[in-house]
Amino acid sequence: MSNLVEKLLCDNVKSLKPYESARRLFAAGTGETQQTWLNANESPYANEYDIESERFNRYPDCQPTAVINSYAAYSGVAPENTLVSRGADEGIELLIRAFCTPAKDAILICPPTYGMYAISAETFNVGVHKAPLNHDFSLDVPSICAYKDKVKLVFICSPNNPTGTTVDSSQLQQVVEHFADSALVVVDEAYIEFDWQSSWADQLATYPNLVILRTLSKAFALAGIRCGFTLAAPAVIQALLKVIAPYPIPEPVAQIASQALKASGIDRMQYQVTELNAQRSILKQQLTTISDVELVGDDKANFILFRCKQKQQLMQYLVDNHILIRDQSKQINLQNCLRITVGTAEQNQQLMDLIFSFFKQQESAQ
Ligand SMILES: Cc1ncc(COP(=O)(O)O)c(C=O)c1O
Image (cartoon, rainbow, N blue to C red; front, side):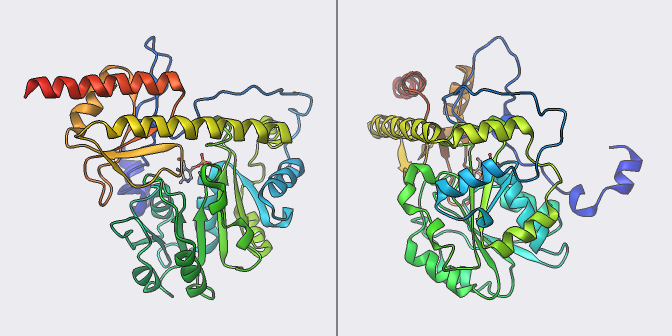
């Protein structure tokens, strides 16, 4: 690092390690070899959209009305409860920037969970407290509640990435009520379309300190356009609008999101979710036939988590054969765990053929 940069860099950024996103670990690039991407919980479907360029010379609306209205209707909330941002990741960042004072405030996370809550907080020099999930991946409610008045935001991911578990509704109720006058409880529902009935969106009117994060990146198959939503009380949305960029949603993104949120787009999404859920069951069933593989967590999202003691060699074998999955073994209580994103029937078969042949080779080497 140049001396000047070293001298100028914020202290908290000096020690920061960037989020190891699936794409940073393995860039998509333009390589000749076709990779099969089962490492980022993306949808395997690339759907088509129409783009009109006639407004490209104008700055876009900060909060495009058509997108806000259609997402609010889809979620059963009012437009005043809805904010659109560059992915749910930007929603996380806006919450931290609006509600946490650097070098003073802190957030609470419940690992093993999605990595960006902690990274976003660290980027803004905001503290991160941890109340790890219990061994069955339920919330440790007493530990969480002990952080009253010590945190401004409590992040709870449900369905949780990477465990695929949902939070028990009575546990969530206890937490939201406990922090009613001291913190916002942020329920990250990035994968909610895979377990729609567990959504807490209909509780927004009851709990003014409840915030819900959503995205078009998963079930809607639009990770590439970067479009997410925050659902919350109007006062929370107004606070986030103070810190959001002036033109966060590019015009093509607004056009694509509006089409995805039309009835036909929602029907297609639901059809694809049904297909992915069926594919997930087949994958799970096949994995259970391997004695060295132990399924971990639950299956309420578009991925499967499993443990095997040969995880390092298996990862390498798959990489060598151009299939990418995600190592989750650095997370608390997830020793030797790997996560597979559910792909198309063909991709899943390709993956399972390789996994079976890996374990066959292991067996014959013994
Ligand atoms: C739990 C969770 N929340 C949020 C995100 C980020 O979503 P987006 O692509 O909308 O930024 C992800 C992405 O993997 C995720 O797993």
